[in-house]
Each structure stands twice: as C-alpha cells, then as structure tokens.
Amino acid sequence: MKRLLAILAFASTARAQSNGNYRFAVDVEGEYRIISNITYVTATGYDAKLDVYESRDTTHGPKPTVVFYHGGGWVNLTKDSHAFAVLPYLAKGWNAVNVDYRLASTALAPAAVEDARCALLWVWRNAKAYNIDTTRIVVSGSSAGGHLALMAGMLPVSEGLDRQCQGKGDPRPAAIVNWYGISDVNDIISGPNEKRYAVAWFGSLTDREAIAKRVSPLTYVRPGLPPTISIQGDADRVVPYTHSLRLRDALNKAGVPNELITVPGGGHGNFSAPERQRAYAAIDAFLARYVK
Image 1 (tube, one colour):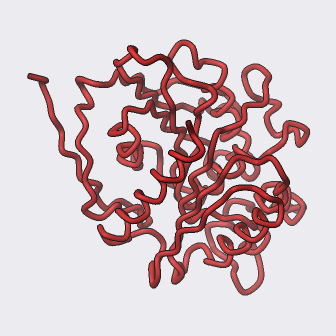
Image 2 (cartoon, rainbow, N blue to C red):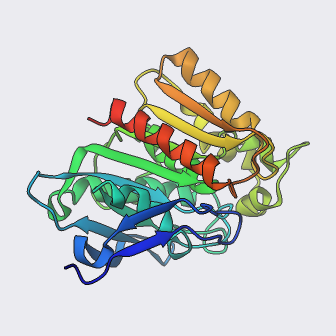
C-alpha cells in the first residue's frame, strides 16, 4: 500500500484564489518526485525559481506538462501560495512546473513577462531531464498569472523579451489555460478601469503606455497561436470581464481555436464547487481535443 494517499481539497488563499470544495486524489509522495526552488534565470540580482513535479511513471514515455504562473497582480503572492493549482494536472498523471517571478517590489514591468518566457524556455530546454513531452506543454495561470500564461504562449521571439533567458529557442505551448487573466494592460493603468495593482507594477515609468501595449496579449493575437481556453466570472471587479470577451473576439477573428467559459455572477475566482467543476470539465475536454 502506498505510504500516503492525500485527498487534497483546494482551500481559499489570498486574493481570491479559492478552488471551492472541488477535490482531487493524488499520492504526491508516492507518485511524484518534487524538485523545489530550481533557479531558471537570474535578473536584476534576483534568482527566479520554479518547482518541478515529475511523475515517477516512465512506462509511457515523456509526460504532458503544465507550467503554472501564480496570481497576485504582479505585486504579491508566490508560487507556494498557489501550489494546489497544479493538483488537477497531477491527478491526470501529468507533470507540473510551478513558477515564481519578479514582482514589482523587485523589478517593474516588463520583468514578470520576461521571467514568464524564461521559465517556459527553461522547461523546454530541460525537458529530457524531467521526462517532459515538449509537444504537450500547457501554460496556465490565474489573474496576473493568467496574463503571464497568455504572454508566455503568444509572445514572439522578435519582441526581445527573452534576451536574459538561459539559452535560446522559441517554445510553442500546445495550449493556454487562462483563468481570468488581463488581456489589455493599458486598460487598467489609467481611465475608468484603473486598478491599483496595475499602477504599482509600472511605478513611475515614463513610457508606461508603450510598455503596457508591449506586455498586452491582445497586441500579439495572430493566426497560428496555441488553442486558448479562458475562464472568468462576468461580475469580476478585479479584472474586467471585457478582457475575456475582447480576447475571445480577437482570437476568433484570427482563426485561433478558443473557448470562453463564463461563470454567471462569478467574481474574481472564489467560484463555487459546481462552478469550478464545470470549468475543469470544460478544460479537460478542451485539452483532450488539442493536446493529443
């Protein structure tokens, strides 16, 4: 009998990252090798780290892998505060990578985006060492992490935001799972939708409108992007719901396979167990379609 069968319930954490009572059964100690705090890039004197959850089952070859970016408005929280977010993928037998990145207190925009790209490139370049299938890498995140997942999956190398990364390459995820992420950063640094966390990410930068456009997923919508599924409540007061609507419409226009799961009356996360179960069912079906 395995040493530890953990029935792990997602619990509420800061900034509404609750997963309700939706449960997953996974023997983390028995089924996974966990390698913590690997430095994937050093920039502005900061060692950006990630955790790898590697399945011990090697009988079926390299594993599909989720790369997850935590939320917190680019200004707070850590990968450790969002560790439960990878459990649905571990329960499916996938590998997982949980990523930290530079917050505003360490470096202003676009540092977090640079780190998001470097983390994805690190996973791609180190795939063999951790039994990762590079054709089945999925990027995901919530809130600011959803924005970073979108940027990691959509940003072209020509934009130059991965110049500090270790090594070169242009990894393309198989899919993007975006939980209520920001798609238009300029929309939230000024005007009627201004958000304090977004203003803090830019600080006193004088060219913030140009940088905000450079780090906005909507800037990079074009044919050939990874299939993308977004989940958001239509009463979200932290990230305007219109961001998901505009992203959906732009992806449709570009011919990119995508889906938007709307939670009626839902806020910024904190979905009920049935709502989250519906979201995960949609994600599972979406990934089954596009991540073979």
